[in-house]
Length: 311
Ligand code: BDR
Ligand code: CA
Image (cartoon, rainbow, N blue to C red):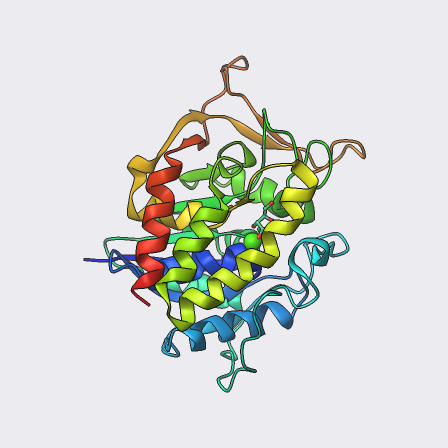
């Protein structure tokens, strides 16, 4: 039986690859895509999610618009990474389908409450505003959540938005604190692992060589997206942050991590949004997250290429 998941996202080129990876994978059943303001504002993130469903002909996947601002702060966006549309690098048609009228937070709550024996796996790959709001409004969903698999944070690697804060956590640290304190089972993909999940020029050649509309779209998007990281970090390719979350659900053996206590800094002006990971267990506090640190990069890229080719 495929594993039921909800993808909570702010597309974003790497979000796009995460969505496509899920849609190309029979191990997963995408119950819905919920959107959150992050890389670009609402309604752009919702339009982008619809574009991606249409690109693959999967207009049966419902898209639910969610939060347009963090819980307590002004929205900070990342057009400097993703371009003004969020999906620069490919020119996808204006969607003919529309988003559902139900709010993302209501969809998450209703889906969890209706969960079967497999529970629901939540896959947030943007700021945690929707997930935190659902948990805060209806805490009875917590036991129905099989796992929350988060792209966010950084510890030895530091941050990509401030010296210590990664973008998704930086945008809504208050939401992140609610999620990490919720007691739900959490698996975290911080920059420490996603900065090793690079897509290199030769990988882009493989994606281009697929020769399909979806393959060409992915190659175009990633070609645009990699310029930022290559220039900023001097690395050879772009980190496929968000697809790590989906790849882990398909093949957990690709990743190595450790159970740790993770707390979120919400007060300090200097370090707001920092994920304080007790990697060495110095506090003696009980772990609240499985924190990933290593990836089998070659296996990960093989999976991405193979599944994109199926679409
Ligand atoms: C995260 O921030 C966004 O820009 C990406 O989509 C990813 O989710 C990486 O810090
Ligand atoms: Ca994202």
